[in-house]
Image 1 (cartoon, rainbow, N blue to C red):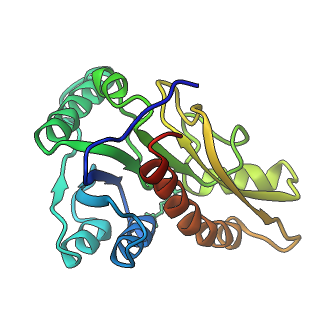
Image 2: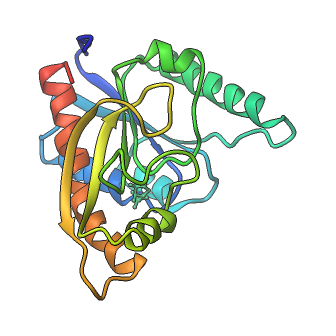
Length: 210
Ligand code: GRF
């Protein structure tokens, strides 16, 4: 695998969110506890207006930015345009690491190349199982239950041009119980996500290589 060095001090971290932001909160708490040093959450971007993740950022004194897709554009252009806007912000603010923490948009183009090896994503399954386009939220857990999995979990991986396909950094497993519903399984996995996302961020920041 190519080696990447996050060599600016501090390592400015951009966290991308779409919803409640409990993974963002885990990162905020880790930074407060000194665990992300020399990483610093420099901004949070949401592709949905008014989500609680933005409030979490504000409460922590982190710039919170809303960048929704332009619905007047056709889908590929929409993705491209949002990606370019995010890339501009990354360059202006000298971002060293991008963390997709429950981010629903698929980004593309120059951003993916410019930040190759410096973007990580968390996904609530043991990839390569139950990943890819359309596999988000409850659907992931429904699919794991329907497949009769005995264990599931979460994965943090490097983002590449595919969806949920990049090299895996960390996986954490949980048992699937006979009485599980998508909600109970999601909740068990969510707790592991909060550990995995911080561990992966630390790996990226401290070693500078995945
Ligand atoms: C998590 O399950 C994450 O794996 C998925 O979206 C969810 C986000 O949760 N991609 P939160 O907003 O961090 O609470």
